[in-house]
Image: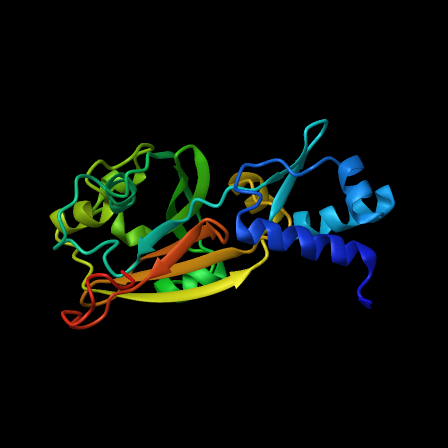
Length: 257
């Protein structure tokens, strides 16, 4: 006889059925009454088991509609190519990569003058509280919230690249625009971290309980100094990031890409 609490047995049984495809993404689970009969358990026990799966981001609940298996249509981001100008792109890298994957991109913008947080100031080598231009993007893939991207540019850069302060999108992408202004980013330093989302991130990205975010900080450098710091916050359940480094000619074409 299992030593696990009954609610955990319910959660484990339903998780196995979700993993096996018995309940596919978007499918509704049986009602609480049906599960009570199946597991010979009280309503509170069934709800505790279902809430365990909700907290793990596997299912979602809607008032009056029951429980549904969450859809996880993962988007794969190749971070090593994301801003490499040797790869052909029509517009910015985000729109190009999403479109090339057969998905539909959409994003909104906010541009403002702000004070550099200490985390950003350290990477831009400016004093904490120094003025920066913040270009904030809220990005979607197929109308599903995918990420937010907050890019800080130091104030000294604005005289050379005034379009950074414009409120709309820069059609060719900021990396190409800066290059056209003689500000070529010749190197990047990436930092990857995970944590649970803030309430604001939960709202913007429509994150289910128990789902972490992936934080990708990229600092771009010219030949002499840093020119921007970009912090991308991605939903942990909808994204996968990869890098391609070195000569990959021996990679099996049928293997992982």
